[in-house]
Image (cartoon, rainbow, N blue to C red):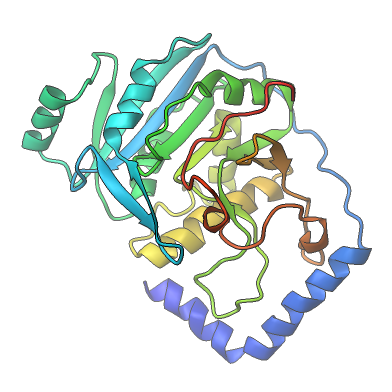
Length: 306
């Protein structure tokens, strides 16, 4: 919390300069042409895919979630994530992992009795300080094998209840696009946890994101051996220094970032640097993508002709 409000205080002091600089970068993006990232070293993908679900023990397995500002409510919950895993019949060997924060032996026992937890589901209790990132970080530090190149899905239980076949399609994107480092299904083009409302910082929203092990390891090396957000214990800090920073680091390392949009297209983020934030190259809606979606927090399928 202290770090977050220190940054806010700095923004307050230098507000006029920072505000003008954000506008200058938008203008510069019209004139400065950036080359696409040079491909990183490609390592053949392993046949095993890791699928991570993080849950807070205080949630019921089926719940209603409302997106603020548009008052749109949808059904979600852990039960549907488990159904996705149990119904998988794809081409990969799936390693399902459930991390649970604030869990108790009673909760885990009740979960196993009431829900379809298969024997191969690894259930791991984690702390709740960094919310979802507590679970994500545990997997990155303790499960991921740096000697294997694997696709890793990270998600929580706020994904809506619609179940479709997407795992193979998403995993295969990393084979097709050799420099792809991060995929999501939703994004925000600004950091809302800032006084500078004119900032343009596109980032993947982390209720669902997909990457590969070599990218995670390089991101952690770039971030002092930590997953962005894992040491934060304040919600606004987790978003700003976890979710938003993750995308920024992936791009800084020279990887491509993309989202599967609601109209089933794969949309790549434009390259950016200190002087060009990619504002005029941006083709998707501005702001929080969920505010424009017909089905917020849905795992979008990909057009099969792409």
